[in-house]
Length: 185
Image (cartoon, rainbow, N blue to C red):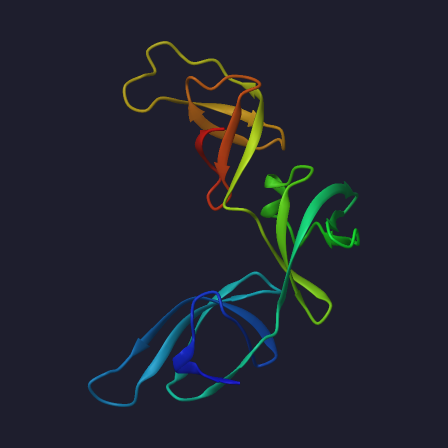
């Protein structure tokens, strides 16, 4: 248990039996009335985000979440298989849990898997990942007025907008936060 005044971004808490990760928080001290803490919390099981306001001074339960580095191996039907590189233990994670992350998964990529009481509750991707371009549309003549871009398909099948000089077989770096081109590898 900890005081709500000690809350920080990224912290995992348990409130009303639900696991949340703190996305944002703000301490508010109005002229009249008592202080409170406004929070934006992500439900780790449902994936939804909601805003909850706590009175200052109340106690919250900190969730003991373990984070493990695992490598992506392969896909089997409706699950993704990851391996712990130190113990060689394999873990299956359902495709429904990785809907957003799946477009960034390639063989051998290291991810951080969050585990709570033996149950996988989330996966964090590296901030930037290098991919090979497998197909690219041709640049259109005259399409160079301001920051001209074209579509390319990377090895995971995802389509990304890149500068015109990127071609097939080039290695590019993508930011997993927004899926945008960052640089050449």
